[in-house]
Length: 148
Image (cartoon, rainbow, N blue to C red; front, top):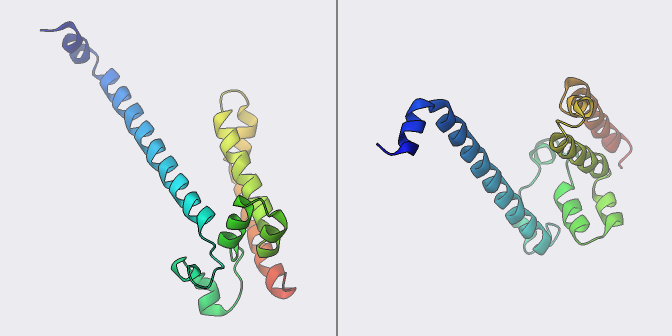
C-alpha cells in the first residue's frame, strides 16, 4: 500500500481538517465572486435610472407602509459611492456611513483575530450588535419623523 494512503488511514482527522479547509476556501471564493459580481452590477447600472432601475429590488417596508426603512436608498448610495460621489451617497442614506464603517471594522477585526482579541470580541460580540440595532431603529424613527 502507498505510504500516503497508509498515513491517511492512520490519521483520519487530517483528512477531515483538510476537507473542512477546502470547503472553507470554496465558500470564501464563492462569496467573493458573488460580491464582485453584485458590485459590478451596481457599479455599471444606476438603480435610480428609470429604464434599468425597475430591475432592482424595491423596499418591502416602503411598499407596505409608505415609510422609509433604515436601508432605503442603500442601493443608490452604493452606486454613488462606487462612482466616488460621497455627497450623493449621503443624500440617499446617511446611515450608510455607519453601516459601511461597522462592516469594515467587523472584517478587519476578523482578520486581526489572533493579534487583538479584545477588538474581535467587541465587534463580534453582543454589545456591538445591540448598539448597531439600536442605532438602526433610531435612524428609522429619525428619518421618518424629520424626513431626513
